[in-house]
Length: 607
Image (cartoon, rainbow, N blue to C red; front, side, top):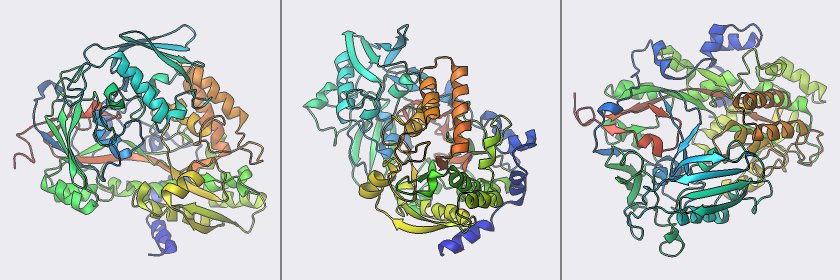
């Protein structure tokens, strides 16, 4: 199908009810609409709206949990390297359970995580009065995995210092942590005044430092033996709840439960098998046959999979937000220096139609499944408690730039000198690094922009050596525009997220804009001021107010345009997997730890 043909097929899929609601404008939208479109919670009460009879209610069964069994999961590709502190997504998803951290993100129980931080290897901590020194006390019962050369020995303070040294010298995102690497990074020094104490000194107050220490690939705890006694690229050792017992390239890996894992004496599971399954259809067949206990099924297929295999349990999960975004180039006489062009671009994005394409919203509704939808601001819409709803009354006048309105977009373009439209270079990848559907989604977005007069001159680029340095991480120093997802901020925190992309003194993830339109990457002083204030604001309510102000202001400037938003996700698992979708929104160790297997349920026991 041609690009034009694919876009026209999407036009035919639009849902009249949602389009009618959206085009009524933000003002006057009632509470019922806000509830239907994401104004409410996506937590445990979501299943109450189920009219399909297909959903299983997530239930905390921890009180009856039993030890033992092998969980059948999967990964999609080989591990390029087991070296820690590297941003390999495949390690984060499954084998991420190998590593331990000083602190951990606390998962939500039957609700989205609040992104709070709790104990890990560090059992407690305290701040200095001026908030520039963080002192953590290390547990005395943390043991490394039962693998040579460490053989389950107790973690000590030298391991903590070695782990920091490893991050600051070899970590992928070390420039976000170590001040000696980047003058804008917060951590000046890490010292150990005694055998159980580690002290972080930072250049200025930073409210999300603890969240940085909980990052999945940053300051993971590594044994000092790594320096000389084994190659971390081919051997993984950590202090997490599972350890790597076997890995065969192109085949898969096996994790064993770490029985001496601190906190609760190890996970319930004895083992986790993770075969490498790059083909979607093959993995789906294995799920249906019970050879996998859960699998990430595409939104278009998940209901069919449930109907084809009724014994599978279908769960409603939290909001799944699109991470893709349109980014603008600032080189030369860029049309995007004019905020009216950027505002028009945002108004041409039919967010509800894009959610149809990516999240299968109407199909779920037609089945009677309850589903919330939200629109991204400059902050992704799954930051519960921090995200400001652009369809809500509190967003203010800049909310209009999120509403799909072709006529108003054309007026803005005409006022900016583009009454007959404009030609723009579109540089992007067509390979699968952002998922197999990403090229189609680009077609959809560009089809929306064409309605207002954008004409795209294609420049297809290679991912690693061209797209990453010349577009994704180039701070807008290119012509035309591009599309990206990521990179990942150094902390799972709303302020860190906004700062990572919008602070002019930040790293390569900064969008590169400047308020005067000179193309000098100098940023916007108002945004810089709001972010600096939020970084040091210890009062949560005041910090949330600053985050809301950033979202309102950027809603008018539209220095980048995040795609659409998000919608409730639906996942499937065999009934034997207990505590599934109970502990949510954390990195793998804190929810794998709570899974257990009931041998009296399918697929172990047939109906």
